[in-house]
Image 1 (cartoon, rainbow, N blue to C red):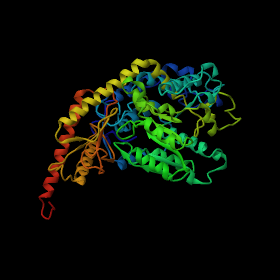
Image 2 (image 1 turned 90 degrees about the vertical axis):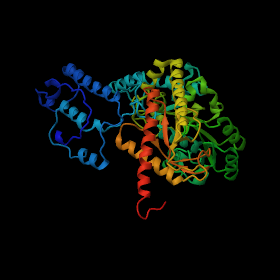
Image 3 (image 1 turned 135 degrees about the vertical axis):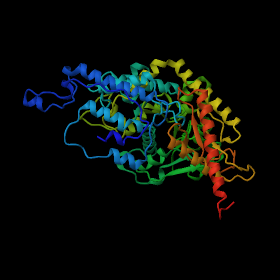
Image 4 (image 1 turned 180 degrees about the vertical axis):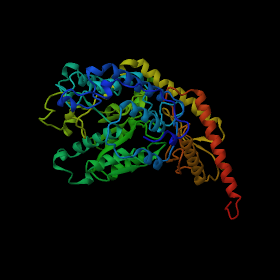
Length: 546
C-alpha cells in the first residue's frame, strides 16, 4: 500500500468497512481439500461476516453517489498510473484492508456522475430500483446465453422488458402465447449503444447481401451507409470496420442538426444500388435533436424499399416515455431497427442498451448456434452477436420500469424538459453566453463569448480558445462538469458553417435544481472573464499581435 502521507489533501471521508470474522479472512483448513479453498469465498459459515462486510461496501458506494463534487481529488494520468499500476504481491491481502485501501487510493479519483454538479451527461446510475437490480443480478449470477438451465426465469423478465420497449416505439408484439423462441421477441439486450448499432449494421449487411455472414464480404462497395454530417456517432463507422465492410460511411449535409432532405435525396440518387442502410438520429449524441423521422422514412422508402432504415434512439428513448414528445417519433415504427440506451435515459447503471427490430424473424440472419450451451428455443446467446456469456443486466431495466410505471416514467422525463427549458432561459439572460440551438430534449450546447466579440466579424478561433480553456479549468477544479466537443454552427447563431467547441449541458440528473443551473452558469462566466483577463494581459506584452 501507499504511505498515507503521500495521499493528496481533501480525500472523501469514507465510512470504515468492518473487519470480517476469521472465517472470512483467515480460514483454517482441516483437510488438504479445504486448504485449496479460496480465502474469501462466500460460504454458509461466514454469512454473517460477509453481510457486515458487504454492508460496509454498500454504504461506501451510496455515500460516494450522494457526494457533492464531481471529483474529490485530481491527479494527471501519469501520476495515477504510477500510484496504481504496480506488480501483484505474492501474499494475500486481508479483504477489509484491501477495501479500505481502495477507499483511500482509488475511489477519491473516480468521477461521480450522480453529483448534481455533473451536468454534461445523463449517466447517473442512481435509480434505486435499477441499483437493486444490479445487485441482485450480481448475486444471482444468471447467464442469459441459455434459458433452460442457466437463466430459467431471467430470460422471460428480459423478454418482457424488450416487449415494453418495442410497444413504446409502435412495434407490434405477437401475443404472449406466440412467443415460442427468441426469434419471436424482436430485440436483444447489449452492453451499450455501440454494440447495438454494430448488430444493426450486421442486420443491414445481411439484408443487402444475404449470406455474407458465412461467405464473407466480397464487394464492399455494396455496403454504403448514409449518415448526417457533423452529428453522427462514431459507432456506425466502427461497426462497418468490425463487420468487414470497410470505410463505407457517406456523410450527408444537415440543416439544423437534421438531414437536409434535398441533400439526402441527392445522395440516394448518386449512390443508387450500393446503399445498404440510412441511419437517422432520434436525439443525436451532441444536441439531442430529434430527426424528421417521417420525412426520412418516406424519402428513403420512395427511393428503394430494400434499404435498411435504422434509428439511433439511444437518447430518443426519452421521447417515447412522455406524451409531450411522443408525436415527434412519427414514422419510427416503419424503421427496420431502433437502438435505445436505458443507461442514458433511465438512471440505470452501466451498461445497458437494446436493439429492437421491426420484424422479429430478421434476427435469424445473424444467428449463432452451438450444441455446447445454446441449442434451445429461448437461448438469447443465439441472437446476441459478439457476446457469449451475458449477465442479467436487463434486471435493472425490468425493475426500474416496473417501479416507475408509465406515469412515473413520463413524470421523470417531463421534469427534465422543464429543467432544460429553464436552463435555456438562464443562458439567454447572460449577455456573455450564446445558445447554439433550441433544445428538443435535455441537451443545450452553448458558448461563452470572449471580451471584444464582434457579432458582425466573429473570431471563431478566439471563441473556441476561450471555451476550451473554460472546460479545461473546470476539469482541473473537479467541482463542476459540462461536456465539450466540436459542433457545426448549423443554425448560424455565430457564423453559419463554423466549427465550434461549445460547452454542453444535459438535464437528466434528478438531483439538479435551479440553483445548480444559476451557479454553474455564473461559474462559466467567471472562468471566461478570468481567461479574458489573461488573454488581455498577454496582448499587452512586447511584440504581441493586437
